[in-house]
Length: 171
Image 1 (cartoon, rainbow, N blue to C red):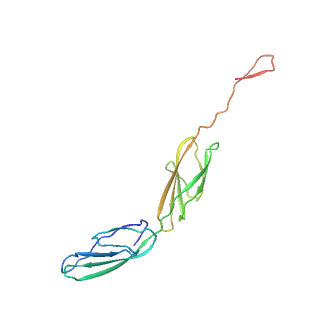
Image 2: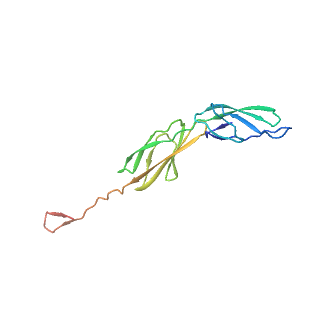
Image 3: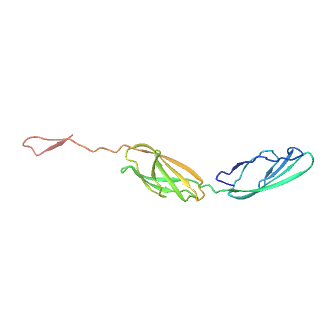
């Protein structure tokens, strides 16, 4: 039973001829436990854990079941942008951890699957760059950086030349 999430909801499925269980002793395999019927538990490190439940009935009879779970490592998505406002582009500096593949999006549209692509914005204004970092086991994490690119200057001038004059006036 492998999961990307470190959060687990355990459910008692104990039954018996003498009735349902009346007490529960859970051991989550990480040094912690619970006496609740259906406990919720968070694992703080990836790895394999043996979860044990000892269920007891009013008759004093007990039974034990042990099952293994695998908490998968979750990637951490992160990046910075080296923005060139004159070219309306940015070079991605990928800072993601535990990821083996990437899905880059610009304003919700796919851009690249490379680890550190160059992104062309095409137009000035506000943009959202998002990466989905994917681990070997398929776990994902997202990060978004908002970018505001200023309008590019529009160079231009007018000139006037008077007849029979070599002086040019710029306005």
